[in-house]
Amino acid sequence: MQFRYGNYINNVPALQLDPNSWTKVANVIYLDAPTLTGYSYTKTSKAIRSSDTLSASQTVEFIRKVSGSSIYTYRVSSFIDIYVQLMQFVRDHPKFLNNPMYVTGISYSGIVIPIITEELYKGNDEGLEPTINIKGYIAGNPLTDKTGDIDSRLEYAYRMALISKELFESTRNGCNGEYAEADSNNLLCMSNIHEVNKDEYYEYATRWANDKNVMKALNVHEGTVDKWLLCNLDMEYNYGLLSTSSYEFNVQSSVIFHQKLSNRNCRALIFSGDHDMMVPHIGTRNWISSLNLTIVDSNWDA
Image (cartoon, rainbow, N blue to C red):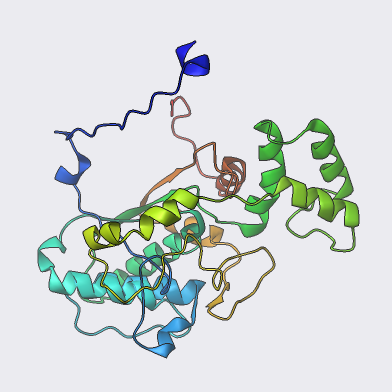
């Protein structure tokens, strides 16, 4: 009763130090990628333009540089940005070289995470130095199959009671089951899709990230970023969009990379929260099923 109908109590929550923190057993490198997202910036105009594959390659290069590599040959039309930064880190901090490494990411990075992981394995296979102790990857609510993931939004919205039964049936019947690739001349379908996919905003996150005290605490170099944006519109992905002035969306699906990694001694954790309509768990479940993996034990609880 207090939770549902009680008076609002404006108490600031207190934080407590966790003696069993995961930071005691793991180190995390956070990358704002591609360039110009988050607090990341560039000093050259060449780095302003990026793509799915280029961003992945840059991450891989970063990993190897951080691991101690002084020479790395770029793969043509491949993954330079994040790779470059990661390699730089390992070179500067060789003590981390032997640590087991897992590549992680969420949401749109689901496109590049398995690509980065596969490239690290391939680099080891080809004898690139240093050898990266890559063990696997982790992806949360990962955009993977752009068509399938976006098509699953209608079913998700209905199951979560976000839309009415009437809107669900009208959209399903009016769009003939195709939502990501809906006929733009089908006015009823387009109108329904607009109702299903309404914008969402996080004003408080933007205010927090642009607070000077926050930026100082995060060691953001003063003057490098004019304003933190929740979403850089020059790189915002909308289905069917092939490129923007700053980014090329050149990977439609990363399922094939998951398939390749499943044939390696590679561990993978794919997890989905049930309150994400951008990349619903329904679509994630569908592409995982398409891998036709052997189920060793189906008796588990999340």
